[in-house]
Image (cartoon, rainbow, N blue to C red; front, side):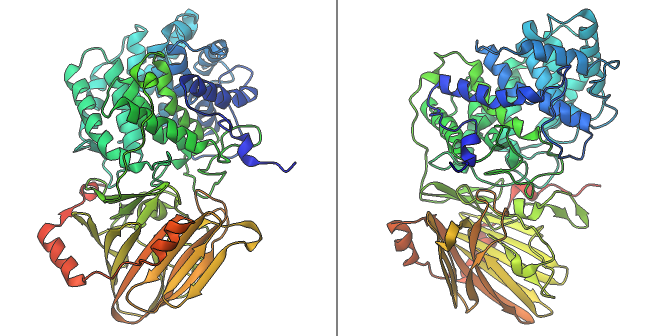
Length: 623
């Protein structure tokens, strides 16, 4: 038998319909980790790959992250046979005299991230992880947490990590300086944008950290805090409003919008639905919340997301280091276990007894002004037209691998994900899905990394950006479901060459796909999907490009239709239509209904009359 990578996925074959199915999934995800616990229980080392932080912190990450699922399991009455292993690890990891000591926090440190799960566990399960410890172990654990929380945390969602540690210390009767707790709660409120949306710190981005961090931790606080009724009410109110927007980041099959950083956390993206349940907040009908949650878990069940031993890989739809962050160690993917928060709820909770209802989708566009997106749904997919968020502010760069691909494409998708580039010195091999790339030497290239202006007017987006200081691009994006339209006005003092990409789709073995390269159109017909890009205003050459392997997040081999051509000195207007759909009659019909080019003068009038700045990029530059 040929090895099937999907069969190593711990979720493989699980129907994921009931609470018992979800509980089984958690055990199946955790059990492959057991052989990798150190002798003293404090460290979990899964492979030799490194992150920017030290090995001890990475080993702590492997130890602590499973607690995001194991703690709710035990809090809800579920059986787990290895609490003694965790007690041993807590005692040894915080003992400076033990060889498995985690190391002392002396500044902003990855350990601060992982200690949040320990604080959460101490708050919910003091009888399992605190009370049985020796007095020496209690003293060491309390001292370790108190020392770590005395340093400044990163100026973003990390501030919640101190709050979670404080909840645990308070529950276990440990005295600490509560003024630090209140200070961070106030600073977290400063990230709130309105209408349920935050940004993750003083940055020009709003991504999955809003649902799976800012709201996730806020709802935990709302459930577990003692007192602080005003803030608890605010967290609940914000989450209730946010749910009505974030549901449009999920498609009708449970896939979520592939956008931004940290996508290796995979089904943590569905943590918002579990957090609503945990906080007893019926922001939407319980059947809809449960449907969103269960579909999302099922979406992951057939994908090769684990190694042969069942350990989750770094990657998204398959093992892939190209898309990873510098802070991803082998234990990082286990933040996915945040999705198991509803296991803290009893079987008779309204969330568990509700019948799943279908996703709320609409062919009409849904504008989201705070992240600068216009959403629309197609079968098995949700598409986001994106104004573009920032990875570069003037001369300042927030360093992140493949940041332009993660935040600055024109369009993102749940079904087709996005691609990252694997060689920035080979223009001709670039994938450039959802992007417009330029070269002036045929070798190196530039794409959008920042905006000078980003606006939304109704369901249309506008951005002005500069690939070089002397080249200006103005881009308008319009939905035309299942197509979308891009208009680019490019002003350049020198001749350039440009490549623009559509959606990347899966490529079959044995060259079983159909590739159509013709003037004004690139078309790829795969076994499961169809993707097209059409030049509505000129005669750029079309091609269906076989992308370099392991560049797309969803599939390891992909095809992307592209339009390519020379740009002369002066001003050129490019008008593009792109779409991708599951193969079949609907896709063939859509190919015959290519939308017409919009009137550029009318677009300019629209934004002069109705354009408002996208909230996510309104943060001032800071040193």
